[in-house]
Amino acid sequence: MKAKTSTKKASQRKGNGTEPPPEKEAYVRRARRIEGQVQAISRMIEEERYCVDILMQIRAARSALKSLSIELLESHTNHCVREAFESNNGEKTIQELLEVFKTYS
Image 1 (tube, one colour):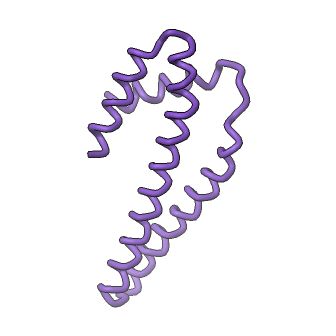
Image 2 (cartoon, rainbow, N blue to C red; image 1 turned 45 degrees about the vertical axis):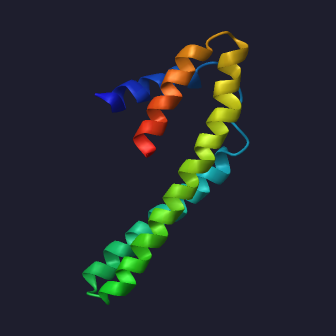
Image 3 (cartoon, rainbow, N blue to C red; image 1 turned 90 degrees about the vertical axis):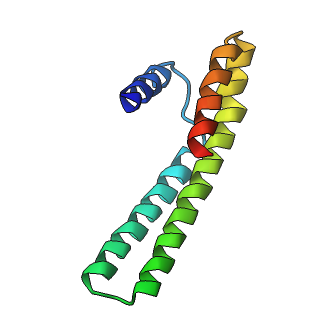
């Protein structure tokens, strides 16, 4: 149920007529690189590669995901949260941000 709510919120924000953040393409490239890492892990498992090598690749993919999520959180805070405060909608945004922190901790 939460995923649908998040999707709805994202689609509502997308339609506000603002330009996409300049980081968008960099985020997409990084996500695709992570996707490639995960596909490589699947191939390694299929090829019955050495377990430690597979585990190292999983660790690298997790690290890449964590790094991307931190950058997205920073961007969200610097842009969306700031805009919410400027438009006097800060309380709602703080609650949303706290929920995000709960999810990541």
